[in-house]
Image (cartoon, rainbow, N blue to C red; front, side, top):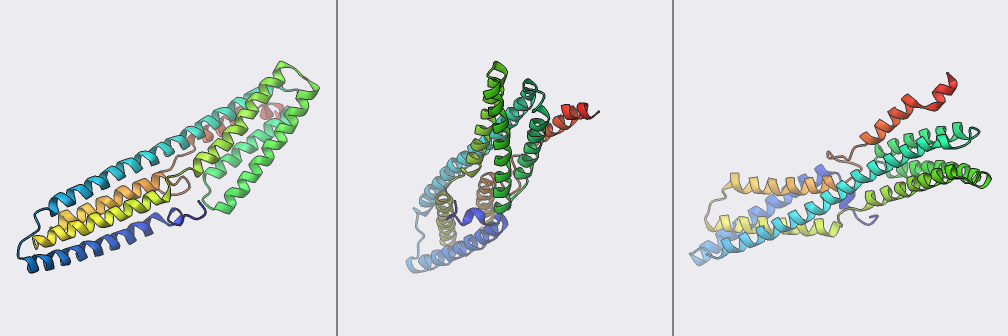
Length: 267
């Protein structure tokens, strides 16, 4: 991921550059199509079949890549849901711990949820790494408390809490993994190459008829770019219009704030 440059570029920059590049190749194809028509005197009858084959291949690539991006998007949504449920269960099972450590563990878990929410709303990579470090510190502090209690009180309650805490930590690692798992950039480059070839061939076919059919031709170009932008947007969990969302974590945070046992103790 560190060596992938397209992934870190703004989508609108990619869209504008693609529009310019595809327009240039369309016009270049049109000019060459007209020149070939003038030189031969007759149009190439098989250009339509060639264009159809290239556009069909491009459509298959779009469908394949969209499926990849959508499946990764769904995996990120599921990862947040699973992690939220695990944190919520861990929070509930704090009640099984001795009274001496309950307040601190409750406080740490509430702080942990805050870190997870900030993580979802951060796009800066350095800030994200700092938040991950802070989250892991909280995990370690809770684990030390729980493991120390398990050594002192080797009972069923301690085992239940340890199991849930372990699941919560594992799911946080899983969430990091699915967030970094995106469509290989080489596939995006291949789709861009196919779009360029398709646009050039389309321009050549229009040149053979000396008619750009600008409305239909450029509508197809714009549609190509829009589909590609949707795929890129789906594949970017940290930016863009289509976001996974953190509603489940927000609901958990509100529930913790509303029903926190710490409030009852203070009251």
